[in-house]
Image 1 (cartoon, rainbow, N blue to C red):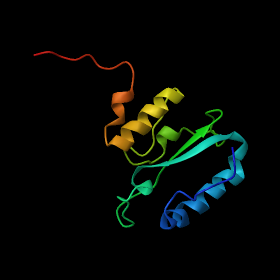
Image 2 (image 1 turned 30 degrees about the vertical axis):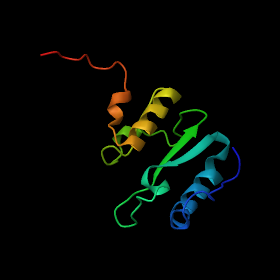
Image 3 (image 1 turned 90 degrees about the vertical axis):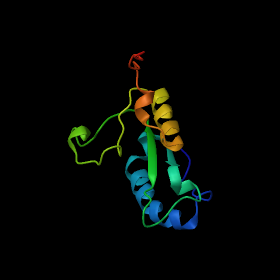
Length: 115
């Protein structure tokens, strides 16, 4: 992965996210394929008081060096997504960007009930 480049992100977002990204890269650079910042942080819709910064980190291997179960940690609903493949991760990213529930990217899709 290349060095951190935030030139396409608004300066106020750079100030907020850069320390986090530098910390992640300092400690895990060899395991990271790419980092994406998505959502309102990269649009004109970002509001410093109400918006969060959505970050997607694609890793070479899905391993947790702390050996804990991330599903048991106190993440807010819809703030962490577990996927089985890169294709599913892309689906989740697109759904989030479009404001659609990421649940539609899951397989198998529930059967449609006709009334």
